[in-house]
Image (cartoon, rainbow, N blue to C red):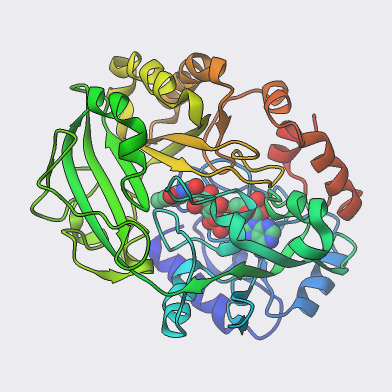
Length: 448
Ligand SMILES: Cc1cc2nc3c(=O)[nH]c(=O)nc-3n(C[C@H](O)[C@H](O)[C@H](O)COP(=O)(O)OP(=O)(O)OC[C@H]3O[C@@H](n4cnc5c(N)ncnc54)[C@H](O)[C@@H]3O)c2cc1C
């Protein structure tokens, strides 16, 4: 699907007053994911404007998938049958200043929420590299940002409303439903259609972002704890050549807590004197402001700006969550593969994430670092490389990102997700016939 069709599709979705079929008749283009590497298995896409419409739609179907903003690289969101989009449901439903929570509708993106939330004096604890993604899609796949003390984005969720396979409206909360809620938040799209999410908020804050160039890898290995804890959010980028991190992005809060004083030199890396893109050849115009210029949290926590193409566009992505105690060994293991990796790579990013208690989160009960790969869009080459990387990382019991490309076997997934059997039971409770299951879920979660 080209850009024009997508704009047409987006505005049709925003305007449509009733459940409406969106693609099919309107375009000869195929419906694809954001990166264009995946042509979805059906063109049948309808949108809903209200919970009642979602209920009616779901009750009448035998099989469907909810589509968010289509930013996953693998087939987790794919359907051979039919899609439902709740993107027109994109309003703030409630802001409870006393309880410090915001409730958003299931189609809202971070890009839509954050400026409004900031205007009302509040902030989220963290964001991913881009604000373009839907909040429900991000929470469903345990999408994360960076920061030693920051859990993934789903950890902000304190309640949710979803429409189950029977078309029933179910409300779950951290307080009232405990373990069931922990199982449902990172739901992989398997439990129902998320129509509302309540997120924890905090008073709005300002941030500064600095980028340093050429951090020797040895300095990172020796100073791992000091470097990772030096700012609120730390991201390291490398092409694996030259035993260095090409760029280190440090995001620090201006007021409260520890602020970063931005020396000229940081563990052997030099402070950059112009804005940079993580992929050095690309324009920094697409990136959030750096050079220590203070700005609102939602314009510093993501690397990429709303309204601009994030990352490279035509690309593939993979990412592995490594239990934090294996961080240095795992990075060394990947570094040994550098000459196989670099020809196919645009950039690698290393981030840290706090532990959580969400069953299907890769950070369940363990703080992690993530090793991320932005690949050139050459699936035949990347598909040969992933098993090699996964073999090297296997001793560390790494968990792949649910929305990115991996070849980890279902048996391995089962062995590294201790809550997977309970998650299967929970899914069956809300979707006994597998209405929301697709080939990805059947293979990786439900065992064929
Ligand atoms: C350029 C780029 C940068 C990225 N950066 C990061 C990053 O920094 N950190 C990170 O962790 N990931 C990152 N990702 C991955 C991506 O953001 C996540 O995988 C996220 O899931 C995307 O949300 P989406 O709405 O686009 O999901 P989709 O691909 O549309 O759907 C993903 C899953 O969520 C389900 N879903 C969506 N909406 C609902 C709903 N309302 N109810 C129930 N289920 C629903 C779908 O059924 C599907 O199973 C990046 C991706 C891209 C393309």
